[in-house]
Length: 314
Length: 314
Image (cartoon, rainbow over all chains, first blue to last red; front, side, top):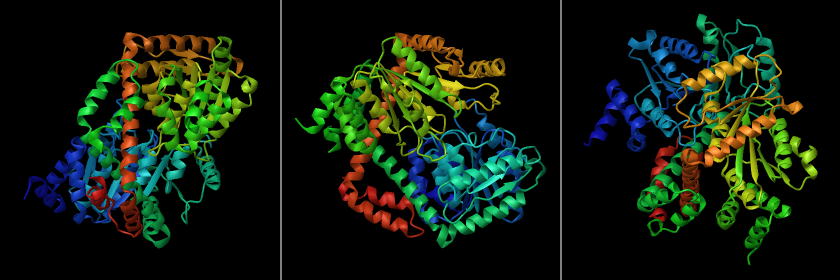
C-alpha cells in the first residue's frame, strides 16, 4: 500500500488529521492533489454543496456561522471552505479565521479550512473543486463554500455548488445598476442580510424587476429571504429554502443543471490535463521560448506557433 | 494568394472594410481568427494599448469620447474595442454604440467596434487579444479597450493594455471596503470622474491609504487625476499622465511589466492551442464521455482519467 493509498483510506474513514493533510496537499501541490482527487472515485458520497457569496461586508461569515449551528442541530456534519483571494487587500483570510474562532472550533462535526490558491485565469482554483471532493469522501454531509464576491469567484461558485446563496445588504445603493449582473445569474436564493436597516423593500423591488428581465431560470424562481444574521433571525427560513432547492436540484426537473455542472467540471479537468501533458512534453523548448520572451520585442504568437511544430508534440 | 493572405494584405494597408471583416472573423470564428492573428506577425507596429475600466455608471464612454477627440487633435489614429459582457443585464452593448453615434462616426481616423464574446472561464476572450493585433497591424496608433468593471474582465485588461485607467466616481460609498481590490492592483492611473460631486477628498484619501498598503508597483506610483468628462474637464491632464506612463512602460525600469505581459499572452495562447489540439484528437471518445455525463451520477473525474488513456492521445 503506497502512502497515497493509505491517506485515501484514512480520509474515507473521516480521520481529521488525514483530511487536513489531504487538503494541504491539494492546496500546496495541485498535481499530487489532482491524483488524490481522481483516486477518491470509489469514495464519493454525494455531500450537499452550498455556495455562499456576496460583497465584502455583507455578513457572509455570520451567516455561515448561523448555518453551521442549525445544520449541527439537525445532526449533519459540516465542512466550510473559505476561499481567500490571494490579494492582501480583501481581508479574505479573516473569513475562515472568524468562523474558526467561534464556538464551533471544538466541535468534531465541523471542519473549517481556508484555501489560498486562485485559478490561473482568476476564479476558483481547481484546488477548490478537489478539496470539495476530499471533504465529500470524508463523510461531511454539507460542504459550505464561501467566496468574497470579487471577480470571477462569484460566477465559478455556481459551477461548484448545487445551491448558491447570494447575500445582499439593503441601503447600499443596490439599484438595478449596482447589483452586479453576475450575481443575479448565479443566485438560487437571495438573502437580504441586515434586514433591520432601511431600504429592504427597494432592494426587493429591484431584484424582482431584474428577475423579470432574466432568462428563464428553469423551473426554479430564486426566492428572497430576509435575515438579521447577527441576531440569528431569518436563518431557519433560509435553511428551509435551501433544502427546498436541494430537493428541486435532485428532482427530474432540476437535473439539467446537475448535468451541466458535471460537464463544466469535466471540461475544466480535461483542459487542465491536456495542458499539463502538453507542457510536460514541451519542457525543453519551453525554456528556450521563455528566454526569447525575456528579450524585448519577441512575439508571443510566433513563439507559440513555433512550439506547436516541435517534434515533442507529435 | 489565398483569401486569408489577401485579407491580411488589405488589413496591413489599413483598409476599413478589411479591418471590419477581420474583426468579424475573430469574433465569430475564433479558430480562423487565431490563424489570422498568428499570420499578422510581420505586420506588427507597436500600437499603444490603453485599457479603460470601472463600474457601470462611472462615465467610461464619455471619457473614451473625450480621449478620442484629444488623440485625434494630436494626429493619432484611434481604435476603440468595447468589450460587451454577454449578459443581457449589464447594458454593455450600449457603450460601443454610444461612442459610435457620436461625432467620431464620420472620422476615418477612428474605428469603433464592440466585441460580444467572453472567455470560456470568464474574463476577456482570446478574441479581444486577437482583435488588438488586427487593429495594430491596420496602423492604428492607439487602441483603447473599454470593459465594464464586472468580474474577471477588469483583471484581464492589465494583461492586455500597457496602461490601465480605472475610472471611479466620488460619493458612491467608495470607502476602503467598497473599492474592489482587483481594481487597485491593475490601475496605472486612477481617474476620479464626476469630480464636481461631493466626496472627492474622501475618495482620494481612501485610494492613498490603500496604495500605501499595496505591494510595490515597481517604480510607478499610480497618479490620481480628477475630471468632469461631460464638460471635457481634466481629460488633457489624463492624457498627459497616460503619455508619461507609456514612456515609463517602454523605459528600462518599466520593461519588466512588458515582459510579464508577453509571458501571460504566451501562456494563454499556448494553453489554448494545446487544448484545441488535444480535443481535436479526442473527438470520438469525447462524444461517448458526454453521453455518459448526461446519465446522472457519472463522475467527471473518472471520465477525464479514462480519456487520458485513450490511444488517440499517445
